[in-house]
Length: 301
Length: 231
Image 1: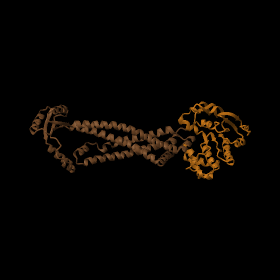
Image 2: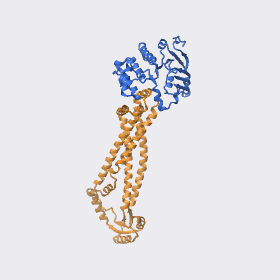
Image 3: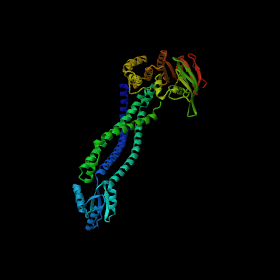
Image 4: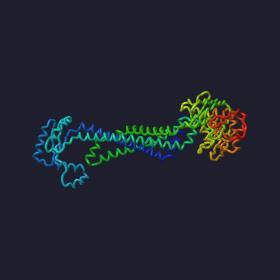
């Protein structure tokens, strides 16, 4: 590759990108769309894995929600029986009023939303602490047999359903990504096709002259690569800024549930390197494939 | 040397463009290929440029079967052949100089050799003073001369010209013929397809006449006369 050739190849690529900018925009947009969805899926999966990892080790409490018609005596009795269960370290009782107050406190500024409630919808709750997380299953099954127990919530259930959601997102995402990949290869190949047709006379001439393959194909390959590259850069920017924004937004909320989530989220800086590598590879790959598809079809003198 | 051995080209199993062509063209020859449109002239040229492959037979160029050339080596083969089109095919956004230099750039020549060779070739075709003009500022004859300059700049062994005077008046055609004859004198094989009987009669060269895809006459240099045709 001599400098003159490189200059020619890049000049031609940039020229036709400019001349053909609307299609170029569509190509870049499609690459960006694929990668943003891919990024979204990656982030969801990564975070769920992270949450599962963190919570499994630290969580050892079970929430037992009681029916509203259970009397105070019964509540006390139940508490004593819970303590007897093998694997239980201790129990603590939370009245429904306390739960509501705590909720109001957690919601902070938004607490006025709760003022309108005529009845407290929250249940009386026993927090059962486990001696060992591994005993959760047997303790839960015993707790569930008590009369007056409305529901037993263990964090593991939440984790499991999170994992299920992640699986679903993964599958849906994979389908979407494959579809969008094909669409963006198609759009890029069409963009390149237009360039091939625009420069059809020049290319034909080059082929009669006996120009080297680099001269004939180079500009199209570069055009495809640049389109993919721009698409992936835009996607990297959007995903990293967007993700950062979401983390900060959640952390800044007073709502406990949400700010709690942000504490479990993987930081942008942790995933940025991988994101850049994955996005650039896929983006440029789409560009090259799009060019090749087009060249195979339209360059044949 | 170029050799056609029993070459036929059939399109879509029904239309035979050329059939059973046997030809030998020696290095340094000047040949007219004549015949009406549809006689097979273009097919013959396309076969020689390896734009298409024969359905039957072989074409040898200096002993090399050109249809055995791999696809990626076709470009290299084509550099041995300079091609002149009827419609010139200059690049409109480049000057005369750039159009000729383009052909050199495409096969990787140093900037220095480009600066040396292009003016030489332009002076050979008599266009030294128009180097900075754009194609649309030139007459048809001048444009064709630029195209010829572009075809010879890489010093091909063979020049193929497809109706190079087809769009030109008789006076201008003479200029073009003069240049092609000059190129031929320097040792380059010239193969020119034409249906201009005037030219064929005036320049006493070998004439190959095609009809319905077959060679019906192969007349040695000087043997052609413009006989009235019955059809």
